[in-house]
Amino acid sequence: MFEKNLKLACLLDFYGEVLSERKQSVLSLYYNEDLSLAEIAEEIGISRQGVRDLIKKAEEELLFLEEKLGLEKKLNEALTQSDKIFKLIKDEQISEKLSLEMETLVNILKQ
Image 1 (cartoon, rainbow, N blue to C red):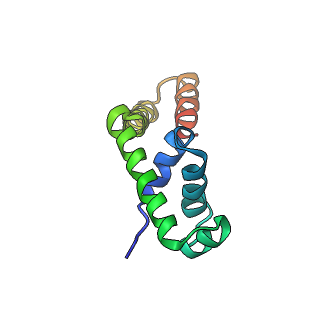
Image 2 (tube, rainbow, N blue to C red):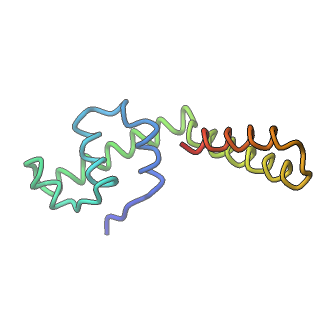
């Protein structure tokens, strides 16, 4: 069975613009719109197998880009670290202003 890897949906957000318009569109329909292979095939006028092949090739490109650039991994590490810092700030009751600035940073990184 062809199962969705939700990590790839996140990678689509990071690297989707690098993909061809067709691959980007198919992945968006599959991951963001949650359409089935058959529904996508009908929408774009190719076979279900053709849709599956496009998705697999596009996913391979996304995984390659993440392997080389590591943007998603770096963002997750930054978010984890900022959460730790924010927790320390709250626990130590450091100035309210600094706490608000860290909260803003966390919100920016999560967008």
